[in-house]
Image 1 (cartoon, helix red, strand yellow):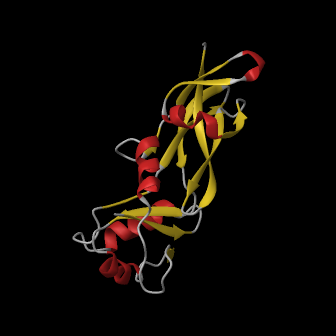
Image 2 (cartoon, rainbow, N blue to C red):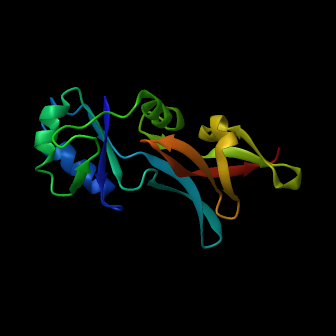
Length: 169
Protein backbone atom coordinates (compact mmCIF):
# COMPACT_ATOMS: atom_id res chain seq x y z
CA UNK A 1 0.00 0.00 0.00
CA UNK A 2 1.10 3.54 -0.69
CA UNK A 3 1.56 6.13 2.04
CA UNK A 4 2.06 9.90 1.70
CA UNK A 5 5.00 11.42 3.55
CA UNK A 6 4.87 15.18 4.07
CA UNK A 7 8.17 17.01 3.88
CA UNK A 8 9.44 20.49 3.20
CA UNK A 9 8.78 21.78 -0.30
CA UNK A 10 11.99 21.44 -2.27
CA UNK A 11 13.22 18.63 -0.02
CA UNK A 12 11.15 15.83 -1.58
CA UNK A 13 14.04 14.02 -3.30
CA UNK A 14 16.36 14.38 -0.31
CA UNK A 15 13.65 12.97 1.96
CA UNK A 16 12.96 10.04 -0.38
CA UNK A 17 16.69 9.33 -0.60
CA UNK A 18 17.01 9.41 3.20
CA UNK A 19 14.06 7.01 3.56
CA UNK A 20 15.52 4.61 0.98
CA UNK A 21 18.89 4.76 2.74
CA UNK A 22 17.69 4.50 6.36
CA UNK A 23 14.58 2.28 6.23
CA UNK A 24 14.98 -1.48 6.25
CA UNK A 25 14.60 -2.94 2.75
CA UNK A 26 12.03 -5.43 4.04
CA UNK A 27 9.79 -2.51 5.10
CA UNK A 28 9.94 -0.39 1.93
CA UNK A 29 9.07 -1.81 -1.49
CA UNK A 30 9.53 1.59 -3.11
CA UNK A 31 9.97 5.22 -2.11
CA UNK A 32 9.38 7.76 -4.83
CA UNK A 33 8.61 11.37 -5.72
CA UNK A 34 6.23 11.74 -8.69
CA UNK A 35 7.58 14.15 -11.30
CA UNK A 36 6.06 16.01 -14.19
CA UNK A 37 7.69 16.75 -17.50
CA UNK A 38 7.22 20.21 -18.92
CA UNK A 39 8.93 22.51 -21.35
CA UNK A 40 10.61 25.79 -20.54
CA UNK A 41 12.13 28.30 -22.88
CA UNK A 42 15.87 28.88 -22.43
CA UNK A 43 17.82 31.14 -24.80
CA UNK A 44 15.03 31.12 -27.37
CA UNK A 45 14.40 27.36 -27.54
CA UNK A 46 12.02 25.02 -25.71
CA UNK A 47 13.67 22.41 -23.47
CA UNK A 48 12.16 19.55 -21.47
CA UNK A 49 12.63 19.72 -17.70
CA UNK A 50 11.36 17.65 -14.77
CA UNK A 51 9.67 19.12 -11.70
CA UNK A 52 8.05 17.66 -8.60
CA UNK A 53 4.35 16.97 -9.24
CA UNK A 54 3.14 16.89 -5.61
CA UNK A 55 5.21 19.56 -3.87
CA UNK A 56 5.95 18.74 -0.25
CA UNK A 57 5.31 14.99 -0.56
CA UNK A 58 7.19 11.74 -1.05
CA UNK A 59 5.41 8.39 -1.28
CA UNK A 60 6.26 5.01 0.21
CA UNK A 61 4.96 1.57 -0.75
CA UNK A 62 4.96 -0.71 2.29
CA UNK A 63 3.03 -3.69 3.67
CA UNK A 64 4.32 -3.11 7.23
CA UNK A 65 3.32 0.47 8.11
CA UNK A 66 3.65 0.19 11.90
CA UNK A 67 7.29 -0.88 11.77
CA UNK A 68 8.00 1.59 8.98
CA UNK A 69 6.47 4.39 11.03
CA UNK A 70 8.87 3.66 13.89
CA UNK A 71 11.87 3.73 11.54
CA UNK A 72 10.69 6.91 9.81
CA UNK A 73 10.82 8.78 13.10
CA UNK A 74 14.61 8.63 12.67
CA UNK A 75 14.63 10.37 9.26
CA UNK A 76 15.74 13.97 9.85
CA UNK A 77 13.96 15.63 6.90
CA UNK A 78 10.63 13.99 7.59
CA UNK A 79 7.97 16.48 8.62
CA UNK A 80 5.21 14.00 9.31
CA UNK A 81 3.58 10.88 8.03
CA UNK A 82 0.09 11.78 6.91
CA UNK A 83 -2.70 10.02 8.75
CA UNK A 84 -5.38 10.36 11.34
CA UNK A 85 -3.80 8.73 14.39
CA UNK A 86 -0.83 9.61 16.60
CA UNK A 87 1.34 6.55 16.14
CA UNK A 88 0.08 4.98 12.94
CA UNK A 89 -0.78 6.15 9.44
CA UNK A 90 -3.21 5.25 6.71
CA UNK A 91 -2.61 4.35 3.08
CA UNK A 92 -3.69 6.46 0.16
CA UNK A 93 -7.12 5.52 -1.04
CA UNK A 94 -7.13 3.25 -4.08
CA UNK A 95 -8.49 6.08 -6.28
CA UNK A 96 -5.55 8.29 -5.22
CA UNK A 97 -3.02 5.55 -5.95
CA UNK A 98 -4.74 4.95 -9.30
CA UNK A 99 -4.50 8.67 -10.12
CA UNK A 100 -0.72 8.61 -9.65
CA UNK A 101 -0.45 5.39 -11.66
CA UNK A 102 -2.75 6.68 -14.45
CA UNK A 103 -0.98 10.00 -15.05
CA UNK A 104 2.56 8.65 -14.59
CA UNK A 105 4.73 5.94 -16.09
CA UNK A 106 6.49 3.11 -14.25
CA UNK A 107 8.97 5.67 -12.88
CA UNK A 108 6.09 7.90 -11.67
CA UNK A 109 6.85 10.55 -14.27
CA UNK A 110 3.99 12.41 -15.92
CA UNK A 111 4.93 13.08 -19.53
CA UNK A 112 3.77 15.93 -21.73
CA UNK A 113 0.25 15.75 -23.11
CA UNK A 114 -0.22 16.68 -26.74
CA UNK A 115 -2.93 19.30 -27.22
CA UNK A 116 -4.41 21.18 -30.14
CA UNK A 117 -5.72 24.72 -29.85
CA UNK A 118 -9.11 24.97 -31.56
CA UNK A 119 -11.19 27.96 -32.53
CA UNK A 120 -11.96 30.38 -29.67
CA UNK A 121 -8.85 29.03 -27.88
CA UNK A 122 -10.54 25.77 -26.81
CA UNK A 123 -8.06 23.02 -25.93
CA UNK A 124 -8.43 19.52 -27.34
CA UNK A 125 -6.31 16.83 -25.68
CA UNK A 126 -4.90 14.57 -28.41
CA UNK A 127 -3.09 12.14 -26.11
CA UNK A 128 -1.11 11.87 -22.89
CA UNK A 129 -1.91 11.99 -19.17
CA UNK A 130 -4.43 14.82 -19.55
CA UNK A 131 -6.64 12.63 -21.78
CA UNK A 132 -8.99 11.64 -18.95
CA UNK A 133 -8.87 15.01 -17.20
CA UNK A 134 -9.91 17.51 -19.90
CA UNK A 135 -13.09 18.27 -17.97
CA UNK A 136 -11.05 19.06 -14.85
CA UNK A 137 -9.03 21.88 -16.42
CA UNK A 138 -9.20 25.05 -14.34
CA UNK A 139 -6.44 27.03 -16.06
CA UNK A 140 -4.68 26.90 -19.39
CA UNK A 141 -1.40 28.77 -19.79
CA UNK A 142 -0.19 28.17 -23.32
CA UNK A 143 2.60 30.71 -22.92
CA UNK A 144 4.11 28.49 -20.19
CA UNK A 145 2.96 25.30 -21.96
CA UNK A 146 1.04 24.01 -18.94
CA UNK A 147 -2.50 23.18 -17.91
CA UNK A 148 -3.82 23.12 -14.34
CA UNK A 149 -6.33 20.39 -13.50
CA UNK A 150 -8.34 20.01 -10.31
CA UNK A 151 -8.39 16.54 -8.75
CA UNK A 152 -9.53 15.19 -5.42
CA UNK A 153 -6.49 13.99 -3.49
CA UNK A 154 -6.08 13.12 0.19
CA UNK A 155 -9.50 14.45 1.06
CA UNK A 156 -9.24 17.84 -0.61
CA UNK A 157 -9.25 19.49 -4.01
CA UNK A 158 -5.73 19.74 -5.36
CA UNK A 159 -4.58 21.64 -8.43
CA UNK A 160 -1.92 19.83 -10.47
CA UNK A 161 0.07 21.60 -13.15
CA UNK A 162 0.80 19.37 -16.12
CA UNK A 163 2.98 20.09 -19.13
CA UNK A 164 1.63 20.23 -22.66
CA UNK A 165 3.03 20.16 -26.16
CA UNK A 166 1.02 22.02 -28.77
CA UNK A 167 0.37 20.32 -32.10
CA UNK A 168 -1.65 21.30 -35.16
CA UNK A 169 -5.07 19.73 -34.86
